[in-house]
Image (cartoon, rainbow, N blue to C red; front, side, top):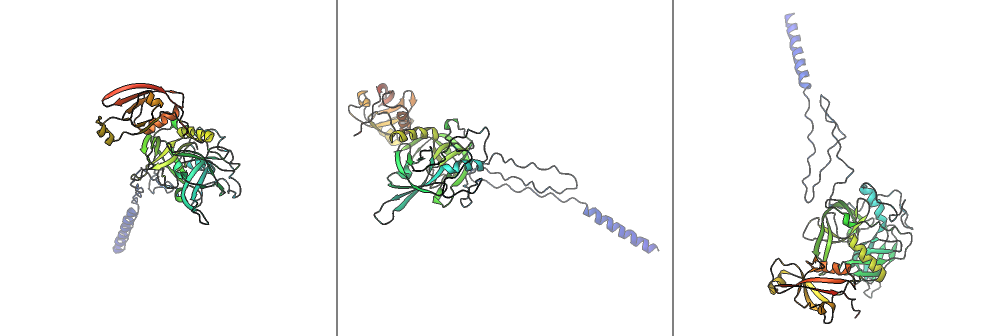
Length: 415
């Protein structure tokens, strides 16, 4: 009998030990590791659908906010159709509950999907062709444009259509139309086309002067000419007021810098705010930098587009000069201080307003009407803002002496 009691006690002891081992809480799973960013920071939201196991209640983790999209320079895959409220017809323009040019600016930021839904019907694909004399023309370029009014005017980049005769514009519903060039401006890399279509959905053009660095933006366009819906990418306004030298030899000023992905084929497409307003026209990328793109600010683009629609050209005040950026080589040649910023006059037309005011080749324009002129882009923009008939006061540098002169801007000769 004593043996049985001891055996029973041993069994009970074993059960107690097993039970106590089974009551040890399992460690909570570690949070998912955060991916190491390459160009822009990206934080993966923590999982919220599986509660952490614990013998005691564990506070529920708060889901990561989703109202404000995290900026990223990665383009949205183009094989996934853009979200639309209803299946789109193929024979007529895409209907919208409210045409984009009539809705008012939302009080709050819109989700990216809603922004894309509103702006996508205003974005067109541009295919350019050259007639080689063969049976079929040869496609030579792809680009993007944005419809700016109900009369069929499309704003795009000049480099998309420069020197091209045959231009085809494809609408969001797949309709392909021949386009004519209304006007183009090389100095701002902008052009306006017109297509023979009705029932269009013009984009709502915003105010780029209200942009802030760090503000969310969306780039949309037909990147790489891929079939189907346009490509969408998200990012932020990385900087404002940028000046760059374009491959065509011109200087572009007051550009918007963004990390929203801009690829070949995006040229001429809209850069859009989270209020579904066009704030820029995508125009250039920095080939040596990852995630660095540039857009012409929409305020300048509207001014150019209005003049192109009205007269086919941009009317600038006429000085009667040829000029160049003041490069380090010129600074050395002229013996100037290496920190000198200005525009070098390479030729002055005899009898022109500049000639009569005493300006000569080799002079360096430092400012105009009190505004610094550090590059040819600034001077060209000044002349666009000051048409013929307005006065211009120039602070110039000749050798090591500064002088001031004034004159009235003239009308550019037609010959």
